[in-house]
Length: 320
Image (cartoon, rainbow, N blue to C red; front, side, top):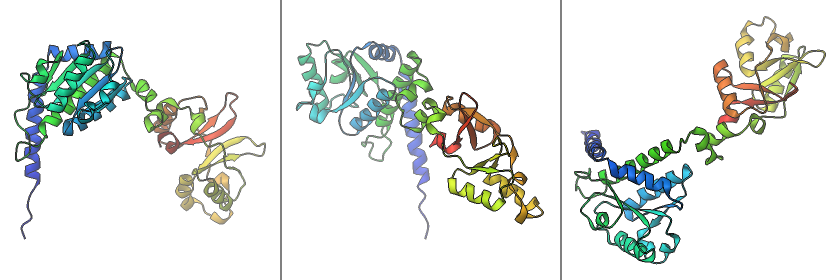
């Protein structure tokens, strides 16, 4: 049985959509700058209105805008005409998305909002037809004109929705640049995710405060039990005066095990690394991550302001 090859069709899809994006890219100009300025200067929200596949893309763009601190949301044009228009205020910017520029639900929403706000509402059209009704009745037009859709019928939204998505991304990046938005700013709006955790939280918020200890003369059996019981892959080692003088990781045991002549009588002293790499509890997780990467280790001993050991932080603690 001859297996059908599909990837050649996939390559054609990529080619058509790449060509579509190149076409839209070449059309960028003054209207794009005007749209960015309009969005940046608004005292209200940025609201996207669309329907169907374009609506799905609009919802994604709105979510991206919100993620960089621009109050933004999506309204489905199908329900907008039945009550949701009350969510729009005169100081908002509304971006209407319709590839044809003749989608009735979108045009109805536009007309109704202009009547409600006496044409004071700032409007932007994202459309594939600059001669369309939508384009002619909005303040700014962003062209997403593509030569053809990528699917076999040339009807299903493919190239056009890709162009819309990338146009939204282009607006987002331009706005980030204008606002000097950086990773710290991004983390402010994503405090619960891994980005927020590594950029915003301090080591103190992520460290383990229950720390395993052994002494230099603790038997290797007890060392292994202690590491296993605490589940962080290490134990600290104290001397006779209860000073922390070293560290043993489970990796240390595996590496040195074969080189110990009398394993049965070996102690923590035979496996430990003298000293340890530490970090202050008030440092950010980002600094802990960088320090572990620089030293090619997976944990740090945490110290308080008096240089007292108060915890252990692992690579998993700052990334997960």
